[in-house]
Amino acid sequence: MNFFSRFTVRHLCYFSLALILILFMPSIWQGLKNSHDIRFHTTWFMSFKDAFYSGVIYPRWLGDQFAGLGAPTFYFYPPLTTYFFIATDLLTLRLLPEDHVIAIAGFLMSIISALTFHTWIKHFTEKRIAVLGSLFYAVAPYHLMIDYYNRSAMAEYAAYMWIPLIFTGIYNIIRRSPTNPLSTKWVAILALSLSALFLTHLLTTLIIAPVCALYALLLLKDHFAKEGEQTIPKILLMAFAGITGIGITALYLVPALTMMDHINTPALRRYNPENNYIFKAITSPSGKDHFLLKIFVAATIHLALCIYLGVEAFIARRNGTPKMKHHGLLLIGSAIATYALMNGIGGKILFTEPSPYREIQFPWRLMVLLEFVTISGCLMIAQNFISPRQMKRATGVIIAALIILIGMQGFDIYNRAWKKRESDSILISPLLSARISSEEYLPAGTDFPRPHLDMQPILNYGAKAEQAVITKGNGAIKAINRDGTTFTMEIEAKTPVEVMLHQFYFPGWTATTESGDIIQITPYGKDKLLAFSLSSGEHKITVKRMAVAQEKTGGLISAISLLVFILGLVWIKRLKKAKRSK
Image (tube, rainbow, N blue to C red; front, side, top):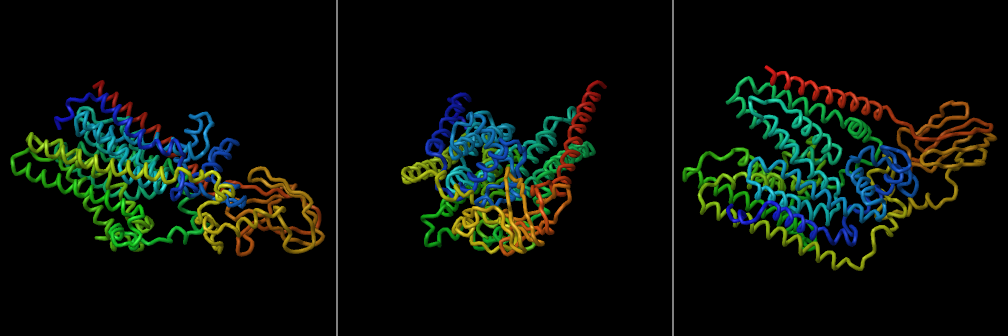
C-alpha cells in the first residue's frame, strides 16, 4: 500500500480526527434526537445522574421513572455506558443539556474505538494503514450511522471500544516470546476489557464469543506446534484473565440473570429473529425509508470486500506468495459466515429455542461482529501481498470501499440533520417529562399498554395528589414524606387496614415500624403497586429500598474476584522477575 507512504502518520491522524469530528458535528450541534432509543437513554441518564449526584454510587432502582412509580432499570441494564455519560457530564462541567452530553460521549467513544482498534491492528499492518483501519472502524456504518444516529443503541455502540482489546489481549498473551512469556499488562487488559464488555452490552459479548474462542484455539494450536508444553502456561493465563474478568462483573451479572422473573420479560421477546433477516429489506414495502436497507447495503459491501480479498489471497498463493497468516483468513471467513446468518442461512440452528442467541431478536445485530472481522481480516490479508500490482489493486478496492461507506454515511447523517433541523429537542418530550422508561421494566404480570405509545394509564397515577391510599379498612394517612426512594408515613388505623403506595413492586422494598418491626410488602392488584397491612392503632411507617440477596452475593463475588485478580497479577509479576534473575 505504497500510496500512503507520501503521508506521515501524524497527518493521517489529523485527517482521521477531522473526519470523525465532521461526521459527529450534527449531533454535537443539535443534540441527539429523533432516533429510536434516545428517549430511553436520555431519561435513564437523567434519573441515574440525579441519584448519582445525590450520593448513590450505583443507582439500580430509579424512583422517578414511570411518572414517579419507579423502575428497576439498572438491575438489568449494564451500567458502564451511563457511567461514561456521567464522566462526560463532569468533563463538560455539568453545563450542557443531557442530549448534548450523550452526543459528546458518543464522539469520545468513537475516538476511543479508533485507539483500541489501533492497539490491535498495529500488530499486523504498517503504521499508516493501521491509522486508516482505525478510522474505518471508528466510523463503520453500523457503528455510526445505525447504532448512533438511527437507533441510538448507545450500549451496543459503546461495546465497540472493548472488542479490539479482547482480541489483542488474546493475541499478546499467546504470542509472547518464549524468553518472555509472562505479561501482567496483557493479562490485565484481557481481564478488564472482558469486564468492561459485560458491563456495557451482554448481547455483544454473546455475539463475539464464538470468534474469540476460535481465534484463541487457532493461536494455541500454532503455539503448541512450536513450543509444546510451553503452551500450558498460556492456557492458564487465559483462564485466569477470563474467570477473574467475568467474576468482577458479578455485582451486575448476578442480579441481572436471577431476577428476570420480576419484570415484563415478554417485552424482551416481542421480535423474532426469523422476521428480521436483512434480506427482507429489499422486499419490504417501506424498505427504502428504513434503516434496514442501509444495513443491507453496508453488509453487502463488507461481504464483497471479503470475497474480493479472499480471491486475491488465493491468487497470491498460486503465484508463490508465502503462506498467508491464517488468522486473517479466519476473520474474513467469519465475516462471510456472519453475513449468511444475518440473511437467514443457518439461522434456524442459531436462533431457535433454547439457543441464547434467540435473545438477539434482530440478526442484523451481528453487524457488530461483521464490521470488526471484515476490517481486521482484510487489512491482515492485504498486508501480506508482495506483488506491487496486486498490492495496488487491493489498495484501490479498500480505498473505494472506505470512500463509498463514509460517503453514504455522510449523506445520510447530514440529510437527516437538515430534515430534522426544526424538530424539537428530545428534552421537551412528554415522555421525558414523565421519565417514561422502556416497557420491559414494568413489573411482571401488569397489563399496561406500551408506555411510550400510550403513557396515560401511568400518568393517571402520577397525577394523583396522594402518594398512598388505604384500600381496605377504616383509617387515614395523616402525613407522608418522600426522600428519594424512602417514604415516611403516619397512619391512623381505626380498624385493620391495607395501605397501597404508588410505587411499582420489586424485591428490595421493606417496611418497618417505629420500633423496628418488619412489615411484609406484597404486590397490589393488576398494576403491581406496593401494599402492606397494619393492625388498628397509630403507626409511623418507613418504606424504603434495601439491597436484595442477589446484590450482596454479586458484590461479594466481585470483591473476591478483584482481590484474586490483583494478587494474581502480583504473583505473575514476581514470577516473571524471578525468571529474569536466573
